[in-house]
Image 1 (cartoon, helix red, strand yellow):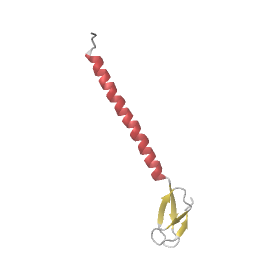
Image 2: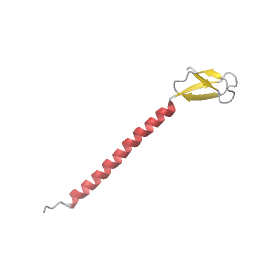
Image 3: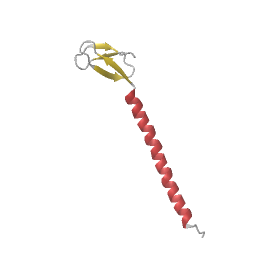
Image 4: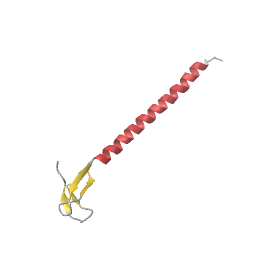
Amino acid sequence: MFSVPIQFLALIYLGIGMVGIFALWVYYDFRDKAEYEAERNVTVFHCVKCGRVYSKKAGAEMGECPDCGFDNVRLKF
């Protein structure tokens, strides 16, 4: 039988823990970035009839106002 020093086992144990924490950090970083980008990519509209500013998902050229139902063109900056 072979002998393994306790320091080596402790090092392996800590190394596995640190790799696990790093993997969780990377996973949640990518997940949060994807959620932020999806939330950030919206088209802004300004209703010319009632004056409300509202948003819809990205790519929409026309958007119906949630208050008055008027179809508005997207706001261009």
